[in-house]
Length: 292
Image (tube, rainbow, N blue to C red; front, side, top):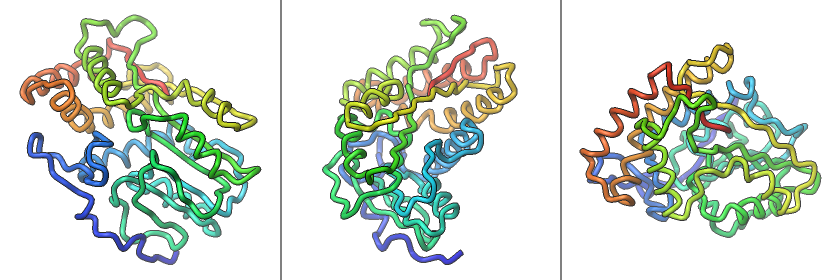
């Protein structure tokens, strides 16, 4: 495998620290994304990538894409999906875009990354055989525009695949109630995202948005993501074990900025709530889950 530098940008130009919670955030269009981009968060994103693959039975995608010449990964994060696609399709050109240049410096020769905001007007010079967007829940304000731009960027006969969450936590057996800290935390977080104009529950709406944008042969599949290894099913038990680790790793990052800057909580009060949330995560009697 040949390697070339992925980008010549200086990462320091797109990084800032938050003195209120000690985490690092992107500086590009400051405030448009509330999650941090420090090493802890990047490690969690890579862990979540493995969980996504595990959930989909070790697949990076579901679309019957054949051998695409050009692949676009919107919101590429650490770039791990784009890099693995570059390895799997060495004759393809793979482009990943994100708000932060936090991807590796050395990548496969057919993979490159660019700093870009998916919510702005896209200016790509050519179409793509496969457009991929993943894990943008609570990061996008105008999903209809995003999906429409995916359609416009996709080559006729090509495919677009969106894999995303409904971030509302629930239980099918009533074991998660409104009295649990986990439910309260989830309600506070979803409310804060909505107040910012970011949709935290895009998953079940994507099929409709794609049809409205002009896509044909739209296929939708729902995956359950248990929080913890409580399921009896072996596959779901494993997914749940990975999911709870990912959630615990990201709990502060996905909560502190929302609850202190949007909802006005004191950091100390947030930490008290999060201690109870972690306790609920680990309670095998609480059968909480998310949908993908």
